[in-house]
Length: 399
Image (spheres, rainbow, N blue to C red):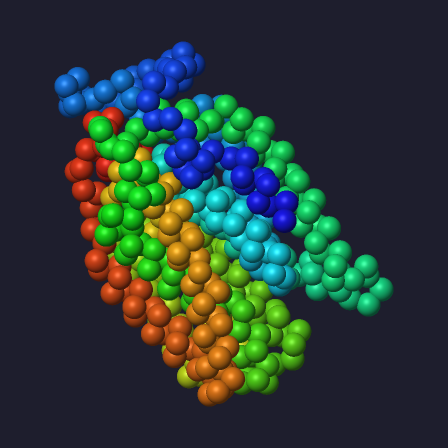
């Protein structure tokens, strides 16, 4: 439960919206940093008539220097988020889910706007998968005979959340709502909130439905794969647990190492590659009745599915105005994340009636729907201008 306290202290878009939108003080330090960054990253075709004083210079993970610590804090936050999602919870964990949602929106937007955003977003999401991988292992070890018991796992989570709270608060202390709004102004004369503006954009809804399906497929596979292996493939519970760990481990590896493939192909076509490989591996997993083949296929499915979410986040930050990034990603995290609850529940209900072997056809159908949704997104950033006069073309380091 400490997770919501940690994330509530961070400057997410929802908190920023309640701040007054006008007459923000311009900090000398921020002006100096922007001026220096603009001197390094500016382009010769920027016209003074179209660029305001709030031109945003793309940041890097180590520039300004405080970003080194901020990036490390966000990575640790996603390890904790993954540990929460990778473990069983109780009703009170709805508060943890709220904290996780705030962290998801804030840190995906923060990392996604950096230079080398593919690599940075891949590492961020790999931290999530790492947390989801180690959480069941820790819980299982603490539940073994002679150990403290399952409840000790929550001591570990509380300690991890305290570290999350301290590091995030210390590194983002100066990033207040006023600073956020001064760096990400809304359209001139716009009175509606950023989340409301995001909801009026059809790309926000396409992205949200994509995340809904992706999270549903991811959690359904990760949650039901043990049951599938024990009932359909005749594996022991230990072997089934190892296959689930292989799935999450493969997802961690995919998010870490496939960024080069994404950069080479571009976000739009790389997603179709990952979806196609996932569908082929799903067919092998479903139709080849062999324990070893199924275990290997499950790990490789994790590798192929791993980059999908960070790729989607990077693309949406490129095609949406900067001022709507947090609102769009926050809405998608809330709406789309519910797919991780609804779809596994639906799979369970169908499994009760028809058998757990229905898991694979359902996941295959979801992958096809994800491909259809992805077609609706633009391949290239649209040249819409934000208030600052900046074209919404995403991180400069990736163009």
